[in-house]
Length: 125
Image 1: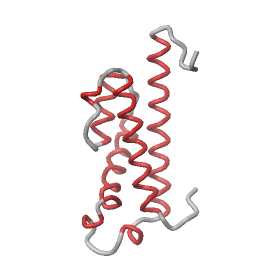
Image 2: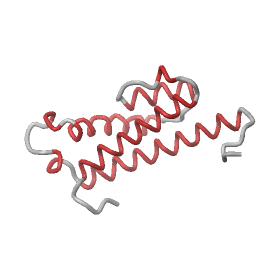
Image 3: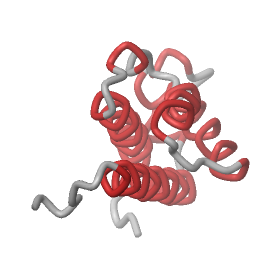
Image 4: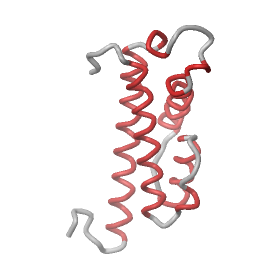
């Protein structure tokens, strides 16, 4: 749970973390050419195709919402009025963190499945 009023920053950083997790998975499977751009919904689609990332319709929808919510937190001129700090709520921040956590878990599961399929241990051994 978020305890500060910087909800806009939480949305920004949750999106950035999800983006990097997806790009890391793509690069990890040798698909660096697919790890470009900022659209996390597209990155997730690419990761599903080349790395077996399991993203269902519900999570795909939440990724689209996070992608939309992220833009004004990074580019304040995208707001009609006010500042990012005044335009985000605790609910926005909680939703963003929940979406990031689900993406992170899906990336970890995909990586584990890939390394298990290759006969390698995913625990560093």
